[in-house]
Amino acid sequence: MASVHSDLPLHLMEASELSLGHDDTLIIERLSVRLQPGSISAIVGPNGCGKSTLLKGLSRILTPKAGQVLLDGKDVKQLPSREVAKHIGLMPQDNQAPDGITVRELVEFGRHPHQGLFRQWTKEDESIVNMAIASADLTDIQDRKLETLSGGQRQRAWIAMTVAQDTSILLLDEPTSALDLGHELEVLELIKRLNEQGKTIVMVIHDINMACRFADHLIAMVGGKIVAEGAPEKVIDKSLIRDLYKVDCDIVSQPGYSYPMIIPKTLCE
Image (cartoon, rainbow, N blue to C red; front, side, top):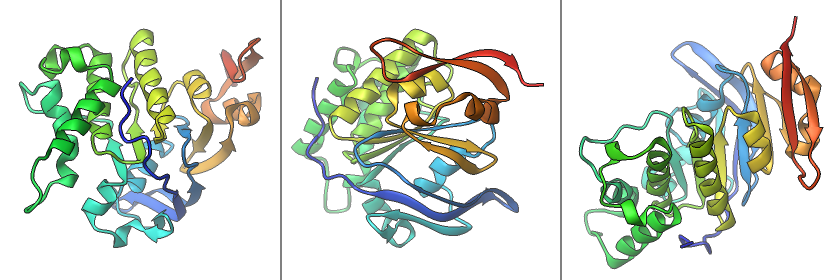
């Protein structure tokens, strides 16, 4: 599998006393978290708990009401947008592309932060786009129109566009949303490969069992606050699942696997 600049340096990203919201509504208040360089971090929790809001704050789409997002100790608000885009790639939840666009044309958009008035398309851009397409296993369908693809293929194309930014940090907002089990696994295996190639991954994901399987680090949120954080096998217990989802469950370990599996039983009274 092709690698996209796997020798990129690791960058430390963290939130410090971060408050985020929309208009007069505060969703996250004074949240601090340090993202683990070189790992897959999964943000989990119930609907409306602030997962996507946190990701938007980390990516500068949402301006903090207070606090800071730091990249290697520097406030990202003070950095030029193009500079931030060379270190942090974002795949938002609601992706929209022009009608008729091909997979390759979409992935080429990922090189936009590297273009400029005096810096046009180069052989390096071409090479990175080729590697991004190959890393997502899309080479054979790169000339197909996006609307003709399966759900899993489309998500892989959007991730490939983010990969083409050639950043060390990828923020993925619900990359497996609305996918069936097979396509969900297809996308998560791509994310795992990208991590093995040196990318730091931060993703919002609803499937807690898939989060436990693929993530090195869980960030569990309720009501805009982090209520648990750490390796899945260390933080997942019945009490946490009850707090997150109001569900009673069993938690089982499988021989040969280090991650826990949650089996829901009933809604809490």
